[in-house]
Each structure stands twice: as C-alpha cells, then as structure tokens.
Length: 264
Image (cartoon, rainbow, N blue to C red):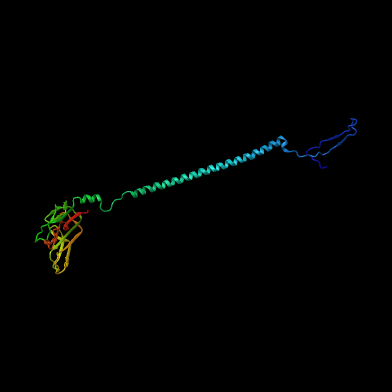
C-alpha cells in the first residue's frame, strides 16, 4: 500500500436505503483525493501574505530612507568642501592684499624731492638783463638787476658779478649779442663765463666765433653766443661774464642776459 502516513483516510459506510436496515456492512477505505485549497481562504494564509507584503513595503521604505540620507550626506560634504575652498581663498587674498597695498604705498624717492627743490631754489636764483653802458677797458660786462624781468633772490649782485649764497648744484647761463656796422673776416669774438673762488679765477665756459661775416660787405652784421651748463658751486663763489669786445654788445636788453638757479 502506498498511502499517506501523515493523515488516515476517512471511513465511508454504504447502507441500503430500502428497508432501513443495513443489508451488508462494507467498509471501504478509500483514499479521498486531496484537492488544493487556496491559501487565502484561511486566516493563517492571509496573515502570511499580509506579513510578506508588509515586509516588502518596509524594505522599500528602508531603501528610500537610505538614499535620502546618502543625498543629505553628499550635500553636507559638498557644502563643507565649498566652505573649505572659500576659507582657503580668503586666506590667499588676505596674504596678497597687504602685499599689493604695500606695493601701492609711495616708496622712498631716490633723488630730489620736489618740495625740497622748491624750498632750496626759492631763495637761490637770479636773472640779469643787458646794461646799456659798458666799460671800454674792462672785459667784464655790467648788468641790470632791477629793471624789466631782472631779479635776484638770495643771490648777491655787485659790479657785474653774482655771488652764491649756499653750496649746491646750479644751472648757470649767459647769452650775448654782438652788433657792428662793418666787419673784418679775420675778426674773432669770445664769450667767457668765469668763477672766482678764494680769490682765484677759473674759466668754466667759453664760446669762440670767427669768420661770421663776408669780406667787403657793407651791411651791418650781428651774431650771438650762448653759454649754459650745470655747475657745482660753493657758498661765496662769484660768477662773471667777459667778452672780447664789450662795446659791440647790442643794446637789446632781452638778447643779452646772465643768470643762474639752484637745483639741489
């Protein structure tokens, strides 16, 4: 026999319904086929399915929460990175700005300060113009110190000479104009500026001209000479202008001048 030992078959009794008495008692042990019964027809099966459904739903929620947490942590990490980057940039700018400000700060000037230049030259300048009357014998020219544009500031003028009031670097200059109704081609003219220091004279600039007119010309001739240079002068130095022919100096005041001004 190949029965199911787990469950015993149900006995079935066959009786005669004619007389109400059992004609024959037969016992048939038939194995009733066990038809499959849907699990949802029983409360335990429904509970099990509900439990499985809730389990799947709980798993989805867990995954969703995990993804949200990952996004939150990613956002926090990105924010922390941006903050760190901004702090690094601020530190770099904090170090660069003082250096740039220092580069923009006025540096110590090398050389002459304009304010000091104005202070030093304010009382150390002179400009003289031509004098109408010149001596026949002396070669030192006379000048006008108080007429027209002539002036002296901190510089002393006496008998054609300018005396320096303080030691320093000066620009000195002179121009003369020679004028004559006749000319000899062999004539020459000189224009000299000299410095007198401790009783000794020294030529510091000189201009020499010759052959500036045409032989036999009956027209008046005129020529000019200009001197100018930087000179380091000491206090109490004297400057003079000498020419070879003082009587030939023109009467034009603005074509003949002599002066200096202190640079530092």
